[in-house]
Amino acid sequence: MTQVDQFESVFRSALKESFKYENIQFQKILVFTDLVETEGNEFLTNIKNFLSALSNAKNIEFILIHGVDRKSTSDLIKLIDDYKPDLICSYRNLYSGAWQFPHSLGEHLDVLLQKTSVPVLVLPHPKSGYQSDHAIENTNNVIAMIEHLETDSKIINTAVSFTEKNGQLTLIHIEDEIVFDRYINVISKISSIDTDDAKKKIAQKLMSEPNDYIKSCQQKLSEQGIEIEVKALVKFGHHLSEYKQNIENHKVDLFVMNTKDNDQMAMHGMAYPLAIELRHIPLLML
Image 1 (tube, rainbow, N blue to C red):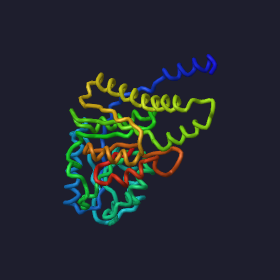
Image 2: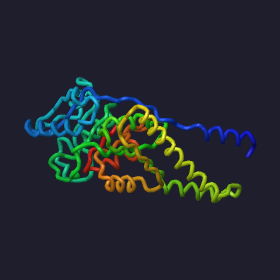
Image 3: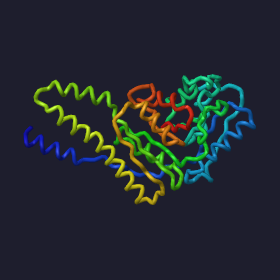
Image 4: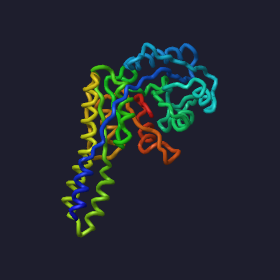
């Protein structure tokens, strides 16, 4: 390695992504249900209680769209365009009986999650009976999935706004162990590279970058007087199983993740498999 290369490596190593705080508020929330009026009003009351941690909760305008008559996805998109909400709330398998089966979000949510830029809060179906005992009670235990540090400030700021005062927000970052092992296997076939040294240093860097980012998040939130506990969970593992295990272990009230992918029409990365697997707790999909 030349001295120029060494200098560039040291310089690039010193560059760190830093969390940028933003106070995110929701002024108007649109709630979709396929329930009769009394059940729809009960669902709305549960939503209001669940979202009571939002800083402007008392001033939020809630708009309830209910009724057993089926609406098309085009109808829902038009309502979103008309009302221009900051948040959409509904549950999986809206206008469908497929909530009995753990296979999909349903066609309406599939379209809404990709067709609109509005965050969607996806709740367990109110008639399903499979939601966790602690689900939809409060938001004192929130987990946010962070993947790309340069774009994760929005996810974290949104998760912060949903976390109750004195509650806990866990920022989880899982490095795919199978992918890591594959690259180390390739490196082992290059004679000019010390495989053991490369494996150790690459692993350290992969762990240190998200940990440093989360430390900057903890510092910025503390400076802003945000009274929540922010924890880091950074490790190697299999994405889906690690997320599921940690959500079960922590009895999570809300899981926050990115859904959009600018390079494709389908949901981003792990968003869809996680949404299918985690049907027993609320999901906030951005």
